[in-house]
View (tube, rainbow, N blue to C red):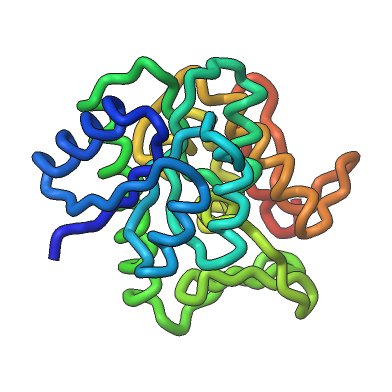
Length: 234
């Protein structure tokens, strides 16, 4: 069955263009013009992905995204006319999977949507391929099949993107990943302007399983390059 998207956009012309292009690309689409309508659509059935405008009447896109993730996690591609880095980081902080600024190419929109869905498929395939294999790194247990992280027996709440970044690093202790490499591996594409976003995610990961800033136990910063997961005994 074709994947289904929910397009939440208050501008009718933009909404129609997005739906037309995604439909041509093989998607089924439902639409909403604001947050209340989006939640009504979600109650009727969970889509494979939400394309969400940031500037909505009433409840803005950040609030909508935060509520979506509380109810039932769904990947979200956020759209906005704001170009500031702070706005992008705020979107990721509430659980958005990707961020596209207006005006945008409809081809790029479709490519970003496909990249998100590929990542979801890859995560599902990883879990199916390794149902009983969990990584133990220091006092962390990272379970790919259950998308679960525990620290000293206690659950650690990570967003899907944070989990993917932690897993990518923990699978190869000592290997240094450039920020662009992490973006390609986790987001599915390289964005040379996305380094700050990667830094923001790593900073949040460090705060969740407690990782001392002065001497990180898990993720080590390699200045001017990127990040690596600390090797045992290092």
